[in-house]
Length: 201
Image (cartoon, rainbow, N blue to C red; front, side, top):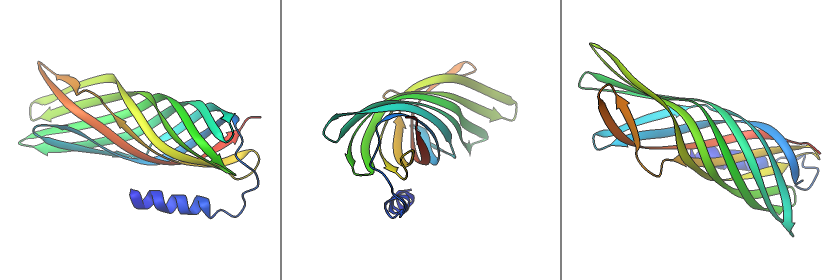
């Protein structure tokens, strides 16, 4: 994933058609990316992967020189899943969708805004355990924390390209109930995204 991030950043920096400095203000856009994550307890890890697609809306404001602050709302179709079979049990985890409220603060360098971002994220997740006698499942809306870094590069006065890497994690172990048994799992996901941002003013 680090190679993907470096290659994508190189493409953005090398873009020959940059025509404007970074523009703060209202915006909307879309991103697509790759996600890898895990659920883990003392018996081992379950790896998850997916290709999430997100829609974003937000606002940024220049506050002092080239310092930029803003807020962003993001809704994503996660398409993230993973499964593991051990001793006759198949455990499958899925993440269907998520919604996040992200603060952003960064520094504008000509056409580029380099920023850090973070905030709460709610994800609709499901855990299933299947044996020869049936399937047990639990589905819940989980609240996690999201943090990451990114860059928006202004290509034209109204269009910017985005590259963002974020980490979603649970500060405390998530509790799941499968039938009469409960289990606690630590969870985390890393996502690298590319997208297009449209300035709305």
